[in-house]
Length: 381
Image (tube, rainbow, N blue to C red; front, side, top):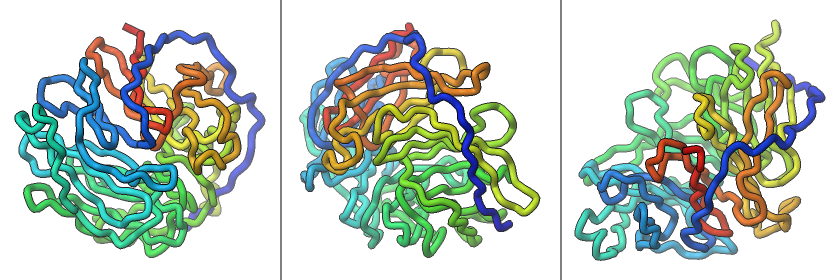
């Protein structure tokens, strides 16, 4: 199928400030330029800990413990995300990480009970030298449904090839390359069934790759250069308005605008149809977007915020105060309503993580940006 996006705009008031039903308590863990984080049980005590760049933080103590060395680079750190995964399958969660300009992906081996108690650095192992630079963000994502995630990196260079890398675990762990497209990349990435054919596609800043019917690592993908956007990482594909057609939720990573593209199906000529609706344009740089059930109603809320000093403050609105918000879908008004979680002290980086960190039955939020790695404890329960 050859499909070209047809985009129209609908005039709907951006999200309004709703009553704030949820209190959040802020816990600052550390301050550095790191922008990646993850949540996992690092020390196997049954409690979720926080991983963030150079350090990990034990649940309850929240003291910085050493993990790996990361160089500073031009206002950033040489790391663009943290991914907790037991790479060598020894029962202790490790960390996988890539970076912006260098081309290698590494994994960092959890030293186990004794090593963690001693504050040992985690041993670095190379997974692969991809040969590809200009990496905006990476993801662990299970493309083939086998329960083991694959690695994929988004590039801000739209002409970079796109690969999915299968993960070989064990002591000789490595990433194995599979071509998705010789070209077709760009700032922004997401996964989901954009054309409603029942197969998960890959979205990038300059279009989308249509998944084949067969093996996704052996059959060719078709690229559709349907848009040019400087989109968030990730872009979310989900049926927001429950009309049976998938929509796209994304942020302008380096400008003002949190956007909903409402799916309107496929026209007779095969073109995908969307209507654009502004969710919120009151702050810039919603570079990471996440969904999780914060209020316990069984429905996911939209979570984002302002990335702190992206491009070292050179983006539109780059000098404005940080903010973190969540949004609930208002079906009666056909729009998202905004709830401010924190205004003026907490922003985001490249990843937003959600989990019940304190074990009280509600969902908490972890962010890591250039104003610090922080936990936002949900006060629902």
